[in-house]
Image 1 (cartoon, rainbow, N blue to C red):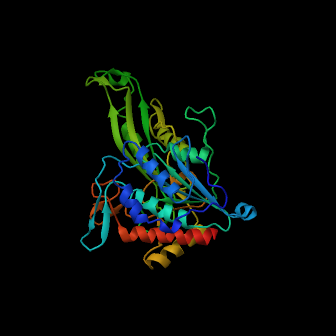
Image 2 (cartoon, rainbow, N blue to C red):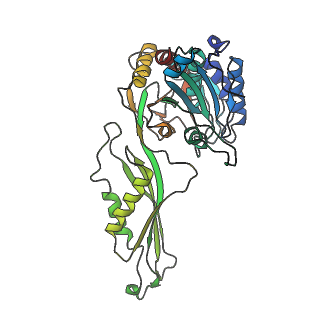
Image 3 (tube, rainbow, N blue to C red):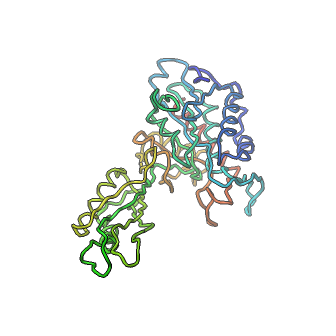
Length: 398
């Protein structure tokens, strides 16, 4: 399959119903394999006159451009991205009403992120670009290693085991996640790693003949607690956090331990990068512990970059277009510009202007929604989100 040709228009765009799509999509289990869900998405696009293609990273992609070549080249290229994989376990589909009388769709993926996907599809299939282009790029593994989104950004050459992937050359990015129709322009990043303190083993009866790595934990943990004392709070995200989440050390009860490790969870704010954090943390602990103790901090190995923090100027035209559209469709309570509450693949697309938007909640007053056993999305909010994306795309490309 290949990209839609410039000027191609869905034959039945007005017939696309985001709620009907969601009713079919949620029962499709996509926590172990996305194959069935990806096939359903491709068939849906084809049924509405779009010719999508699946790249070698498993992303479903399709592009619609202004029919005039000059207008297509001069306008922005807006990329609509979300994911079709879900977390374990699968939660069966239900459609009923909540305690307030709102019609809801329940089941795994209803809000994370098949509900947002339905909204993006509604806009993509309805817009008729008068300038620029819009690309739909749906990734297969956001909940795990983000290899799909990584390939969209960095591409892959012909030597890659799965074959080459052309990067998507977007100017603006709209990423579908559950925000309850608010416009999220920033999110913390998440890094994790292991701090290793190295000493030398000795008999516990002669402790001065060794270097006690477990004893060095005291100074190391103190340095970790002080690490952000002088950190500047981000205007939207606040201060970064650093939490010790695990510790190991010692092999025998009568031996001076030669090694101790601390597992660390970092929630970063711009402009901190994963490598910058690694170097700064290692230096801070090195300065705090005895010179005889070795210090090494390693980020957890992964095949793709960590999800770093990102932020977009709240006054950017992309933000205004989506916020204005959300208020016009759903009312004044929608379209609030705020940070997103979780790390997200949106960070891969920054520093290009990027907004996270969609129906549904990460959590509500009763607890977890996304990733929880009670995952749901309100039907009216799916329609509000779909209307918002349609209006925003018309504003930006019409």
